[in-house]
Length: 119
Length: 378
Image (cartoon, rainbow over all chains, first blue to last red; front, side):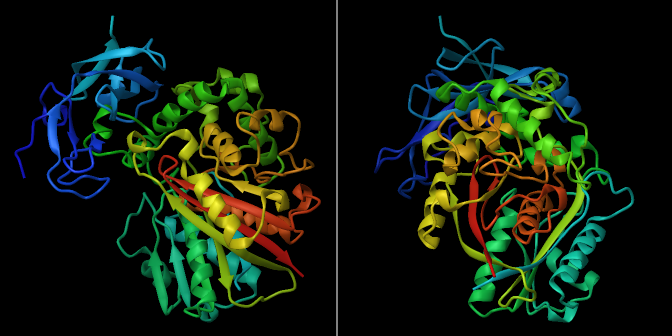
């Protein structure tokens, strides 16, 4: 298996994804095999960070002191240009269908992907 | 064949000083009494989980506590679908001859046994530990995302969703065991505190203490018979990030399988017991199951279709939204109420005809689904 590219879940300001060398399936959750066909060692790449908003939910009631400090924060599902969907934060005014681009912001002790309108 | 021979349900709300085992025991005793069975008649136990008192062997902890030495016992965990998943397993256990009488039980002091923050935080862990949970989502946020998309695709409004909260509250007002008895209006729902938009406080089920149980048996123990006609499951994903398109969710798959297994159609159904963790959950499931056309469920609520006297009475005890939600026992209350309706024991809530009931449970974020048909036999 090839070495893993660091992404935001590892503290790096990056979004990564995997593509299956056999069936071409694209996946966001890092895995040693393709979740569609089982082929091992899918190819790992950094994503462009561009995408479209699939859904939003503005969180106004958080459950921990660390997250409560950020309320309200907007949780998004973003359909990324490379063909995978990811959860992230984003500007409060974003709506379904908006073209967005990623940046990274500290949140509750971690660096998290934060999308803003792609102008 | 399998029959639900007895049901037991505690009031939901605050049970100060009661443990999860206490609430399980109360419900189990009520179910045994209702079935006319003794502890020694029970040879199988299936139980849910307790977030307040997690244990790797809850079924045997309960069996020892309650005084049963079953030949088959374990816990089941499928989130909100657990109650119906246990019922489905009990059905297969008794029909295949593994057990004669299976006690299905769950209870949790989720309201008084831990803080609301602890409950919200525990439940949020159904999210992906690396890719979702660090973003601080809550269960309402996962469903808020789904709601936002569903409203966008099918033209459903926040006022539409509010109708389901109002209906469940109206039903809860007629059940003495419900957690909430104050009627609410669409305006009240709209004005309630934002939780995870578009979901507001009154779009969300509460956290409750409570317990529920039933006995699934190979043979009837009384005159009134409620038979499990057939059931099916579907599991399409765990995390909302990995969920399929709205048109490919598991409810449609599990109901199609259940219809095929039973030979029944939605037009045969006279009573509906549908999972309602949030208003959006109920709206979507009603439409996924075919109990309303796409985007039309709210209009059917407004026209009285799902009311006690309507064509398709729904969750006449008030559902998770207003009877309450104590974890696994929460959705089991839907089955208890269906049983009372089918056996003519629902008092002032009694519907005209509950000869065939459709039950549906959902766990995770519309991840795990169980559909089940119950039939009254004379």
